[in-house]
Amino acid sequence: MRKSNAFIVCIFLLLVGFTATLIDAGIRRHQAASENESGTALVQQLGLTDLVLFTEARYTRHPSQSDLHSAFQDHPMALEHFPSGSLLLPPQRMQ
Amino acid sequence: MLYFLRKQKYLIDYTLSSLLRRKAKSLGLLAVYSMIVFMLASVTLFSHALRNEAGLMLQASPEIILQRMEAGRHAMIPTDYLQRIGQLRGVKQKEGRLWGYYYDPAVKANYTIMTGGQSETPLTSIIIGTGIARARGLDVGDYLTLRSQNGEAFSFQISALLDDKSELVSADLLLMSPKAFRRVFNIPEGLYTDLVLSVRNPREVITVAEKLTQLLPDTRPILRDEVLRTYDSVFSWRQGILFVLLTGSILAFVIFAWDKASGLSAEERREIGILKAVGWETADVMRMKFWEGMIISLTAFLIGYLAAYAHVFFASASLFEPVLKGWAVLYPQFRLTPFVDGLQLATLFFFSVLPYIVATIIPIWRTSIADPDAVMR
Image (cartoon, rainbow over all chains, first blue to last red; front, side):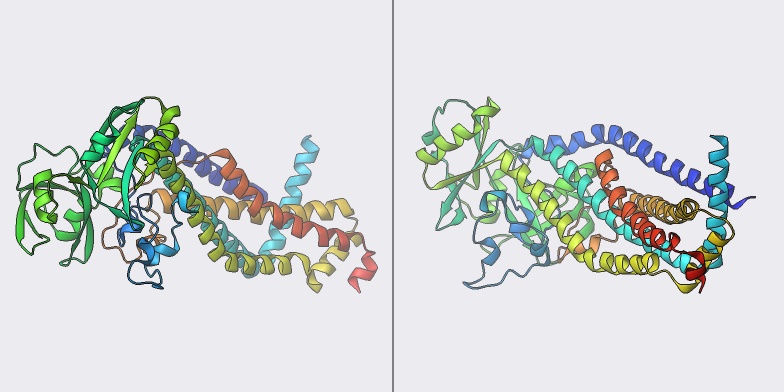
């Protein structure tokens, strides 16, 4: 097989994979719409405000509910020491 | 047209033979290039999907949460604040919430304990999130003992597990009856953690919040829009942080690619000289080198993107998990819903494919307009 033909076949296969990801994204988004209902219902029922991404400290578990001092709660001049604190911005209203 | 296509195919044939002559170098470049695209695409896809998921789920969160502040810290709010709010125009519903944190020394994990909607739950029953069930090895019917504020131990029977499809918002939740909550945390009747208000007209939310701060100056209203904006900025920030961390490797790649593309080796210069001497035109040499850049960058883009898609949406972004987990014991197991949009892909394409092609073309053009005799010497 000519090298150019082999290359075109490779790129074609990769493009098929690329298109498949777009189709997969569409299908899964459609499925998720019904699956997310339980999550949304729970958020509505319990009045949840935050995602369970960082459970190590209260201001990272509920960043939207934390107060001004919570990141430095231990003593004055205390440094914020939880690893996720470095990945998390303070709530919008405090910036 | 057919002539043009045939010519391009011959050029691709020649370019591939030339690349295969330097097999180790070309494959090394392709591997590093694909890896860089993989990292960039993983961060972009992950942040984008998480941001969308948060936006969709938290749309249903309360419109206004009212917290009482004491010396700059969140404090319990008395029930008579509900009466003091009275019949505020526009407020559809208002109620108190009881929630808090419980540190479980057995697994060194923090639980979020709530009471919402569980008033009919028997005093000794609880419902737990799947994250807690996993960490403690619990199932329906098992018992979980919590130590109260007074040091008393309370045993609760698990009556149900929360749906694992909602794990992103419920992994660490523990739901109990309000009476049990007050006993565990020693909170007297007449106090709530915060108040939740729903407003009839969304455009009135800010006005209601302003009225609340005037009426109850020691309180702070938190609006749903603020919650959503917080999450939006959290994910932009995280994406930014990861990009900053990646900058080192991206710069290393840029130097590598620039060196490879711009600093033409003596061998490559001679190759161009010979091609020109045997009759290739400058445009042909440029086209050949364009194909070289295109073959490497397009292949790397597609391989990198496909690997990133599989990593984020099939392997639950397992490479990022240690970073996201931090010191947390409870971490939700969630499968993100893919949100891939054209702008995201176009940005990735323009930042990964175009710079390489441009970096390759300019030095080639400088060499190929030179006299073949001078180049070969």
